[in-house]
Image 1 (cartoon, rainbow over the protein chains, first blue to last red):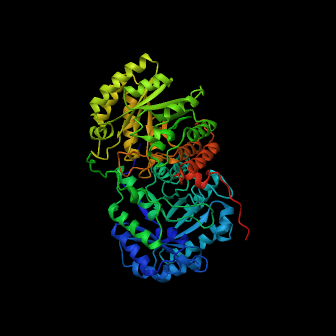
Image 2 (cartoon, rainbow over the protein chains, first blue to last red):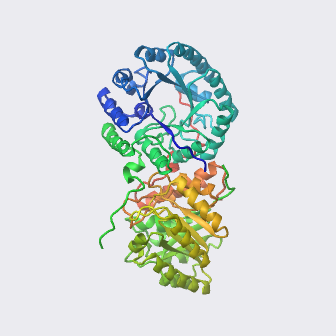
Image 3 (cartoon, chains in turn cyan, yellow):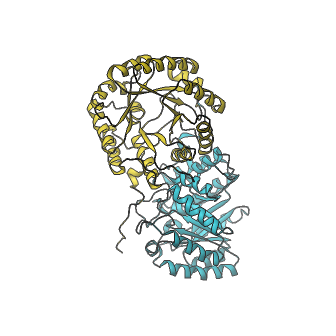
Amino acid sequence: MSLPNSVTINDVVLRDGLQLEAKLLTVEEKLDLSNRLLEANVKTIEFGSFVHPRLVPQMANSKELFKYLKGNHDTTFIALIPNLKGAEIAAEIQVKQVNFVLSVSNTHNQQNVRQTTEESLQSLAKIKTYCDQSEIKVDVSLATTFGCPFEGKIPVERVHSIVEQLTKLSVHTITLADTTGMANPKQVYELVHSLVEKFSKQHFNLHFHNTRGMGLSNVLAGIQAGVTSFDTSLGGLGGCPFAPGATGNVCTEDVVHMLHCMEIDTGIDLIKLIEASNFLQTLVDHEVASSVLKAGKSDRKYEIPVS
Amino acid sequence: MSLPNSVTINDVVLRDGLQLEAKLLTVEEKLDLSNRLLEANVKTIEFGSFVHPRLVPQMANSKELFKYLKGNHDTTFIALIPNLKGAEIAAEIQVKQVNFVLSVSNTHNQQNVRQTTEESLQSLAKIKTYCDQSEIKVDVSLATTFGCPFEGKIPVERVHSIVEQLTKLSVHTITLADTTGMANPKQVYELVHSLVEKFSKQHFNLHFHNTRGMGLSNVLAGIQAGVTSFDTSLGGLGGCPFAPGATGNVCTEDVVHMLHCMEIDTGIDLIKLIEASNFLQTLVDHEVASSVLKAGKSDRKYEIPVS
């Protein structure tokens, strides 16, 4: 089993995690959460999105939040942008890295952003030109890479073709996203391995959901396929508003715990991360889907019961 | 990623699953559950244990249950036995296969059965002699193979040494059990691979818990290490009464679902298995920790919403 020495974690709880929560968090609450992630030494954070507040009210204060975050120069803060307007906001407030989402599935893309995948690729080209002028890095998340809740299986050739177009645009990171938790480890290993081999200069990141319990297995398969960068969400928060039934990104502390158990470095302080997840429960007013928050680390020892 | 064509599932819900439930099931209820497992084509079932009813009242009707099961000749029914007395009960009612548990961790063994590991190995030798005369197959489950909640790490050499003693006794199957969910995929791959290589004629089975969310990842690592036989529990029921905090065997339907997604045959009808898990919830009066019961299979398609 060939494993890397270290893996980068991009926590997405502030964006993908919170955007489906019933309770809208204030800037102060989000900042408190961010600070706990920073204290746990999380170095890459997707902190919000510049979408219309009527569509996603949970993200309405993303711009204001960034004012307080931008001083942390050793951390990468990423904003999701749906269009050129989002890129303009990013430039205005000096966000250095943005993430644009498009779906490999045409049907899913139309449901998600009212555009065909082809139209989204054309939007991306304009965004990329604009961001290059503003010195903003452009990442792309490929939703439904491993399956679409409407179309079902996605042809491998279609994924390869879109990735090829993205590499021609010289995007920074391509995130292969399992938007509704349909991926399995064999599929992950085979598809990711083929992409990493073919586009060996491209930086890939993986985004899994734990919908069918396979989230951590897919992380394992992704690592074995050669990827060392993962989206995860504190407390396993998140889902996809356009894919009914989808619940839960892979949980940051569960992924970090597994990686540390496997002697793979993340640079993250797991104890502080678990404390942050515990705090998150008080913010969102419900239990989160975290295993290590409940059970503790695997090296936890128990007193021998007195008989 | 080297994968097998097929994997054998040994469902342990009737023993390991039910033994921690507050509600005691009647023989009729257990038989109803068993029949649903049989209808789903589960071919190996640990159906109960012959322990003293004062210690584990949930298992008190195991002997009676077997009267109704023994006619299913194409299914392997396994009874857990704690001692020679258990083997005598097995012989009396014509159980053909028994499972004896001992812990690699001496401290855990003393907590579990009030004997040292060495004393348990001596008991096993007598049980094996008795069972050979009665034509009963003897399996052994090695509890705490991947870590002990009291002692912590278990030296690899100690596992190898005990496995060697078991092979000398010619036991049927050795189950490497992660009793309290401490195993990680790297450890599983390395330890299991080393055992499979060294004891290549021995039949191994793996038993994982999902305590820290790594259950299915450990199944994946176990398969990669060359094992094709796993203990799983319908609905993820179960735990260990002597290891506080431990919850949940790996869930049969989640494991079967992952294997089928990976094109690995189990012979099991997944739809009927999910129905059985749904029925289990009504029997035990609580929700079970099953992902596919909640989310459906990964090939589930959704209608495109009407806008």
